[in-house]
Figure 1: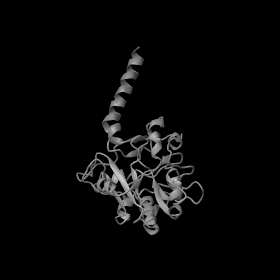
Figure 2: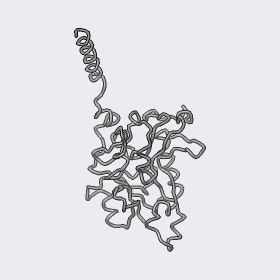
Figure 3: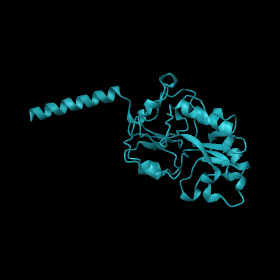
Figure 4: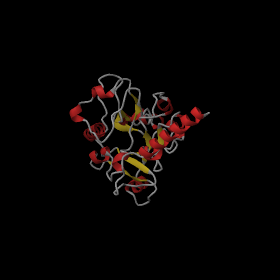
Length: 251
């Protein structure tokens, strides 16, 4: 009994020490230290203007996103992508018809839709993917066990799996040390640049788009995204699924 009690006290002390020197789970999952200039919203949303966003600007958006988040360029069919180009028909095949031939071949940007009802979050067994209070769907790379349930649950193909060690495909001289690199066996995706928002900056793709991508609070009637969605016709991907995606495309 004495040995058991002694062991219990020892382990309890170690646990208390661990909690005292480590951030809480809630704090650890909120990302880096937040700036006083943090950008806030009740519900973040993105609006992509298909008339303004040409091929050159799309490439700039992709490059800015992938460079900032240390996304590796793997020269095979297992390449990692956070934001990429897809033909119109691939994104909106359920909203297309035979007289949209001029649109079918035009590339559009595709990324995580940060749904209000995200199936990826529901199926994750470790809560490695979760929604913030402002609607952004994040990844906790340390909790991901690589089961890929979230990839199966996502109807938009917005997640990539690291079949290889991504660090082997990254140049040390080009690494952005403000964002963590991942390991083999981890799923990753767009995170609406939540770490930049917490530092008072807009997402990388928004900055690179030269005004073709808008980002703001959907619940604010005076925000740019709310105003433009009321003025122009827009589409969301696979609306019949009930996921309520928060990436809108102006057509």
